[in-house]
Amino acid sequence: MIQNPVPWPNGARCACVISFDMDADSLIHIARPEDAHDRLYPISMGRYGPTVAIPRILDTYRRYGIQQSFFLPGWCVETYPNAVEAILEGGHEIGHHGYLHEDPIEAPDQRYWFERALAAYRKYCGGTPAGYRAPVYNINQEVVDLLVEHGFRYESSMMADDIPYRVETAAGGFWEMPVHWGTDDWPPFAHYAEIGYMMPVKAPSAGLGAFWEEFDAAYEAGGFFMLIIHPFLTGRLARWRQVEAWLEETLRTKDVWFARLDQIADHLDGLVARGEYTPRVEHLPYYTEPQGTRQGS
Image (cartoon, rainbow, N blue to C red; front, side, top):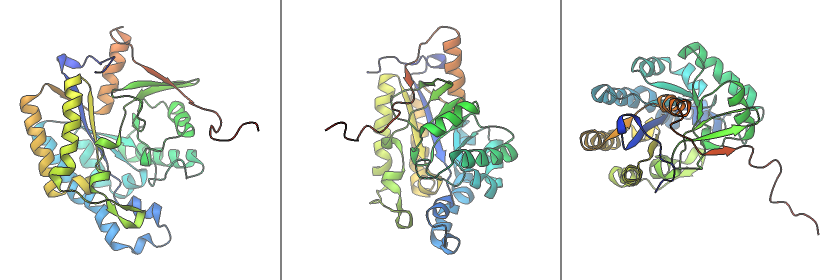
């Protein structure tokens, strides 16, 4: 059960998003900066995303008439402009995903990285993105403050609900489009020793089958279902074939609304403005000092 379900457009039972984190080979460059340029295997694995998987994914969406959300590090926007152009030509949105996939918790001076990426989006995408997703989901208060300062309309890294909710700070707020690891393709498919991930790679049907169980629960509850996919992982032939089959079956048999995340933010803004919905609110910061230190004697 969802306590405060969102009324979706045209009475749809569930809003659906298959979002993409097109990290490409930024992952190896941020993890191994000294010699990444000569690590050809991980570079080539990452390049599979923008050069092979993205055209495949976009072709699928053209055939089904679907538009979705893609998150790209600013460095990837600069390095793979053809992929950026193709994504935008298909009517999809591109969101902020750091500059070189730097972890906000570990990378000092987030303003530098955040605004360096913003410059790339403005140059290659024609404006400021509507939304943000933190690399490794590791958003912190510094980034939250930057999102509010730069007028971002939504964020997609936190996990406090099953459906979109509001995040509010003293300076302003935004919509949170919640993620969770149960709908992320990294655990079942990532095998990447160079950056410290050695997952047991699952068969396409096993790895993706867990996602469809998550969808069934969201659909039954009248909720929100979002996949977080990396093109160089799930854009591979056998895995993407499974996604295509699920898309075809879902579009044929289910009452769902496939939308970009900015479109969902538009819909939520409209509901609130008309007094038709009151979202749940999370107030930040959660804490202002460490909670694990020993107090007193």
